[in-house]
Amino acid sequence: MKKYSIGEVSSRLGLSRDTLRFYEKKGMIHPEKQKNGYRSYTYEDIRMLLSIMFYRRLNFSIEDINRILFKSSFHSYRSMIQEKIAEEKLQVEQHRQSLIHLKHLQQLYQNVEQCLNRYDIRPLQRYYQMTDDSLIDIMDISDLCYIYQEYRIEEQCVYQTDESFLLSADTAAIMKMEQALVHCPMIQHECCVYTVIASNSPIPEQQAILNAADWAKNKGYSLLGVAYSGYLLSCLFHEKPKENQEEDGAGPAHYIELYLPVHAKRCDN
Image (cartoon, rainbow, N blue to C red):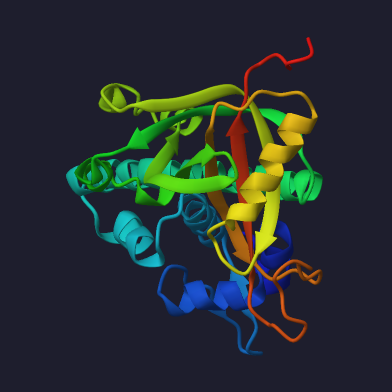
């Protein structure tokens, strides 16, 4: 029977020598030690290493692989596979949720980059208003929700009228939650004045909302008289916000988006 050196096995299988010694220490392979102290590996050792690599790729632990290869019955093997499938499905779901958050953060970064202290006309996409806190707990979606404040604009005054958790309808669709949320009220506006502001506080100042309202009026838009603010993210970039930031302040900058719904057509159209 042909014998292989540790270097040959390492090169052929892409495993480090330390990994090969680790599997040997765990009793999973049994290379023959020559008189000169070198190890030699047989076809059976390589076959066993390929089996270990296969199960490691499936995210089985070393302990589980030991059970599968040396200690399990057919029934226990089937049970382990079923348990692993359930674990992997859970991991897939968790990764999918992480992707939702990461894509949202990517969009938030783009919003900050494009609209910080600038105004634009954008839609406020569909959101479920999570008025029932118990539903959030039951569905375990608190980390998928965002806190939004609602304001009433009257003349040169702004009054906060509500604060609620919102869940994006797109997120709900991806998570297949629509049926469970069928009784939740929704907010959506096709046309809004949109901007992002940076502040030391996660709550916008009244003047920031009034400035957005003035921009809308100057552009000929008719306000609906409401506004929404949402806290985007808190982080400390190299560029400190000039507004409301002390020169020596080391605190994080809070980025807040504002939506002021307006009629779809401007007054001069």
